[in-house]
Image 1: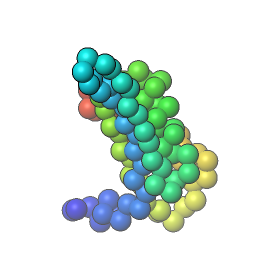
Image 2: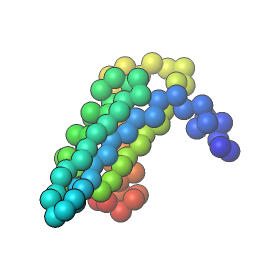
Image 3: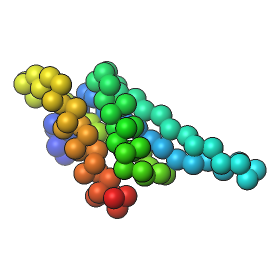
Length: 91
């Protein structure tokens, strides 16, 4: 990575959602992981549901910059996830 901050990201949270079709049967597949940022994966999964998107994965990475953000960090994680969906053309 050219950006040393990005290279040091120590929390990579994600959520994904897609529809799998096997023998004509559709099955919704979804999961998330918070990578130690308790509850962040679930927040991203809720974002995917709220935005009604499918066939997508959203990943948000963060690093500790010296300031404890507390619960407000979830607002930032969700906002970055939404920005990624917009940038990717899903919204």
